[in-house]
Length: 391
Image (cartoon, rainbow, N blue to C red; front, side, top):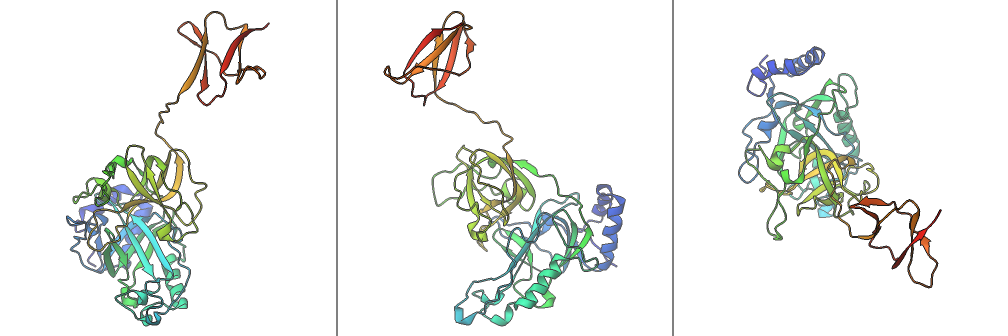
């Protein structure tokens, strides 16, 4: 058996320090099933060129280790929907789609990788052949195969530690995906093997928008995404991992809807300092769209929609929202009413016009610089005030 872990056998020793002995036994037992298969790291697989395209120089097949960050039904809809090409009638219509993300757990490795499969490859513009799409019954079988561990029948869920054995991968949209390279033959299959269920989700990296995007310069021809070819900062540093994006507020809300398709579940957020960013809503409810600042926890993703430019298009696939952990500065205009002397036996009355009845102002009195002060909102319609002595 010839097992190589990221071309560096010392990482296997670090792994012993990283997980419990029970997990390690399961991990090594699983490795035995994959004899002669080279192990790859996420950081190697996701290396990029100066224009953000793939610089990976490895070869297939390979296996890769990671913890599932997503369930199989929260990103894309895998409901079977075979559509024949029909002389272009269904051009581009993919039907069912399946997708998950795994994040590295090995010391010395960083990042994550998206795994994707589609039903109607035959409807792609460069294929145009219905025989190269999955019929519904075959598609259901393929989805079930990927959703369950073949040895135990376990249904995969986020937080599971898995090994994925890969025969094909392609670059698109700023990242290299594990996929079938649009090939329905069994030789193109990738397989998922359980190492340990409920391994646990990694703690999210806590970031703010200034880590991944620059302030908008007002030029629609430019992109504000922070791209670093070394992957040590900016969007590349967080791509494929779990993060908590803090102190954001919605600018657009149309995409805050789990029932919409993938390309319509997008919202724009801002940090209030000229930076703007895209959130992608999951296929389950997150509740009503927040009206105030909030934090969003999810998977940092990239969707540049280009096969030749991967320097932009970073976004957050949201899985949970929380109240903002950043303090909010509130500046408001107030009306100040004040008087000197004792306040215990006096109260303030107000009225909008002298023709109306006087009403008691119930705001609390503040002692400030020897004065008794009432602060009223600037929207208060009262124009007249008076002091009244009472017992």
